Length: 382
Ligand code: GDP
Ligand code: CA
Image 1 (spheres, rainbow, N blue to C red):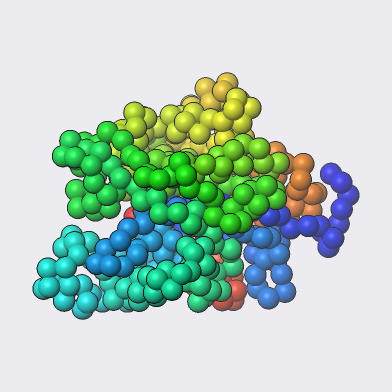
Image 2 (cartoon, rainbow, N blue to C red; image 1 turned 60 degrees about the vertical axis):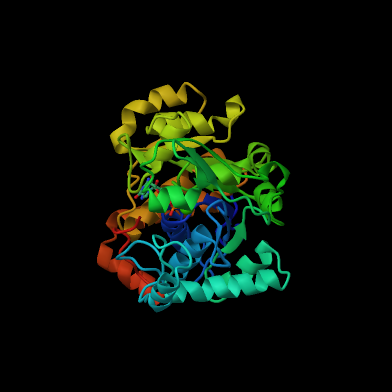
């Protein structure tokens, strides 16, 4: 305790490394937690939230540049995402996709929604005009007040490829066409050895009070981010507390097919294996703290023996409440780790968890609506 009053306290700089749908649910929770703990006068937050997004999922299709994880993040933060289907824009239609299909263009198994195509066309046009990926992401993100700064991991094109029993292919072909069912033997990101972190990424990590690893796919969402030379070292050397959230609960990825990715790189689909894969900073790894699900409490001792702190929390993001509680737990464990955060943060953390305990879903809906925040049913995602 430094005795700094809440009025003069500096709100934290938070950096989140994140993939698409799972990552964006977590970031929505982080943003809402920050709004409650460190409010500004405009319904936002004084905390600075920087999201470093995975661009390993990016691809060229029918002459257009697609950035699935970047778009998932923007749509979710803007509240225009399709919560029923779990991806893409709400109210989407597929007239153009039907025409492309009739022309025999593109991939018949990869549907491009009409609204989504608007983003792809805008992005491709700007890229053709000479804008960098960072500039393009910034322009896309400026359409709505997202409440976070969104950075791509790199300006370089490093699209994920997969080596399978049937040869090497773009990640999207394996994931979407083959539903990750073709046995895979590894992933690669051509050119990544020469890629650099996007402008601002290293600086954000160096200045951060807290670095959060979203519960995103460790192999194909956070894997590419950490494979950009310089990013893992910036995390290792950061003065911030580094907290990861397990995407695996009770031996299964909560939703989706992350287990196929883990198997392809020889990792078990357990919170233990993924936590050890990131590793403790104390032992040359990346994390100080690895949040485990209650279902995985028995793994805590083993993980702590590797130098990680492994607190146990509910890790389900079934709705906004769940995402907020998870983000609050992640920030709480960072607060305990970090000398950089002041006592006001600790105090508001205590206040916040008290509020969370008594809050009902209805109250959250009212709070969120009054903040101008769209309330989503997050249960259907991915
Ligand atoms: P993608 O890029 O759209 O595949 O999304 P991400 O890589 O960001 O996140 C996908 C991962 O999120 C999945 O592999 C799940 O393991 C994880 N996930 C999804 N929902 C939840 C949840 O409610 N809690 C936790 N802890 N993890 C989740
Ligand atoms: Ca993704």
